[in-house]
Image (cartoon, rainbow, N blue to C red; front, side):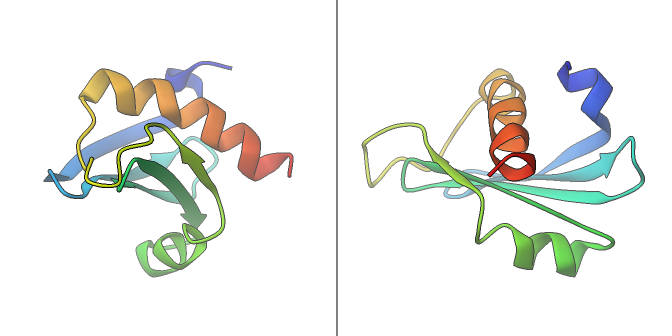
Length: 90
């Protein structure tokens, strides 16, 4: 699976501390991605509120820097698939 096969559309909603993206998956659900304190989180739901709530359970430590709150667009795209796999295959 590729990023393009998973994500239908997305937009960055916050550029730093935390870096956040929200959007639509091809299966019709919404997603919420958040990166703060060196940790990337992914939530999925039928709407934004459910996706944000769901993001508390799926996370991946990306950097060991507790003050790190930014990832680039490319890093976000690279982190989405591992987070998706962790979420779908616990």
